[in-house]
Image (cartoon, rainbow over all chains, first blue to last red; front, side, top):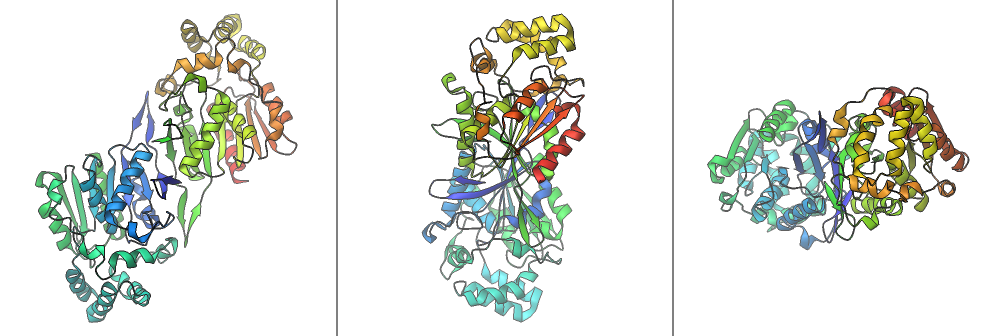
Length: 283
Length: 284
């Protein structure tokens, strides 16, 4: 489906019913909105990793503005405030009230922006393998630990020069395999409708990817938050999630740290990762 | 979920099954099945859970018609088949749904015919299940009498000649509803529905559109393959009404599947055969 959020139409797909027949009533199930990473990727890989959660919630996948099957818009509108406001507009357009919002990696940046700009919006937040503020110094050290100095050098080239198309391929080949501790489906990247222009825009030198910092603001969050992350994540290392947990209101935050997992916990521990999310949704 | 289809009127819908599924190196696109409920005055829930079994084959979009269920009621002047048909075009435009397969049960089949005759290029396929191109109550009364005796006939006659009178609804639900299907149905199905009897009274009240509509002359405009399902024990839309639809459709488009031991909404009495046929039709 494509739904208008004002100046653009966003691609949306849905898995799992919102109402379930149960004896004499139709039971309302929670809505879980899933925000993909990148930017420049699309929702497709979340279907593989998170589709099993349709047993407890109606899953709403979207491609962010500029990404995947959504309309491109213009680079001036490729920013976290706009992506968050798009989500708010989409919820209004679909009549979805108080969704649970799950963001993986870059999707977690959008989830934080949404919760801060629209505090009445989310019922709960799930911040998966993400950060309140990017720390490339930590990422480079983690790449070096996981892939040696060669991996560090390639990561450094990429993260310092993301506007240069020549840096993508070496990074995808040498560094992406280090994101996870288990071999990933080689078709995963092929299934995604990519738009690397958004990635370049966001992470170019001086881009918003290096400037955004939600850490001083996250004390304003009003809903329960699950922070799940892998110990072996090189790109948003555990210290980034620890930062989130340090600044989020204590009574609202739940930590789920996964030993032996990398970036996107469900890619390395699909059953354990999904169970933690299920428990958080249902409680 | 609810979406604005224009002028601030919001239709309720629910979705089961993804549109795109991961398959090797690609995301495979699956058909969209738009499901139209009966009544009017009931909601989409009576189609569940039976039709949910199609989730492995297509994306299911259940919608409550204007004035029904969880949708906005709007102005009763807009409670008519032309509007209900047009609403679905607006609804699909709002959600970017293109070329859906449209399945209508009973009253939902009237709306499906309105849609397909007013917007012939809109549906990819049509499934008309336990419905009619025009109502013929004399045939319904005869069938009620056959299935439930003269008392059932009398209760049915009282209801269908005076549907705007709230006193006739409950006796009809008590006496005639159980005759709709030879298989006993759980009262939970009716209980699950958000009911809005005013729209039923409006449509089937004396002189209402329910007694006047006639798609038989218009059905020649249909351009897509059409599956017609009918139960031979259906008292309210007896099989001869489906046969009329089949005869009125352009040659070569209709596939007719009568069910010997089924009543109103054949899937309730013979789910195995009904869904095997529906699946085959969606795939073909």
